[in-house]
Length: 257
Image (cartoon, rainbow, N blue to C red; front, side, top):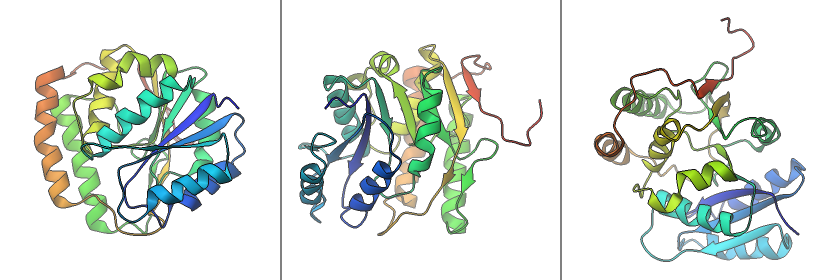
């Protein structure tokens, strides 16, 4: 069965959450929806669980057991290239830990009919993070996002967000194999080049949830590394100090012109 809408989910040590994430996605009953799990040699057995899911959902769950250097960016690049090879028309990226609520999928897939890229945004009007997030984590995320926007002159409000929906056209324009970032800064790199390519982008508000199980892989050290790498992105792509007309933000219910 062809899956025109394909969700790419990178995994590393997500044995406690991947099954629930997959089951919750399929409960949304989105037509022609498939999932590609890209496992980075998880030592906790996530890859084995993913294989079981592929048997449980034949033709709907595909597993890529990735070798080579680990990293979120590397996993997404491999997943995106495989999604294009699988002839997917719409490609969604989501976290494996349940923080990206599948309930937003129908709305994002509706928007992709009119835009090239749809970003699930925590920092647009109506968006946010769950109150269960600790204060330190909220501050870390907010600072990293504002810093990236400042250094790159970005017009996207959620530069570090990882819940995105791409048309096939957009992903081919981005050319995943050309992206340089290997870790979490991958999200910033992709978001920054969207306006450079002249793609039509819209941010839609989402509430970012706590992970289902385990501990976040985000840390102060990872964040500090990202702050340094943002300058490398600026050196590679330049900055944007003009308001980009191709980046739109969906208004919250109480936001006025």
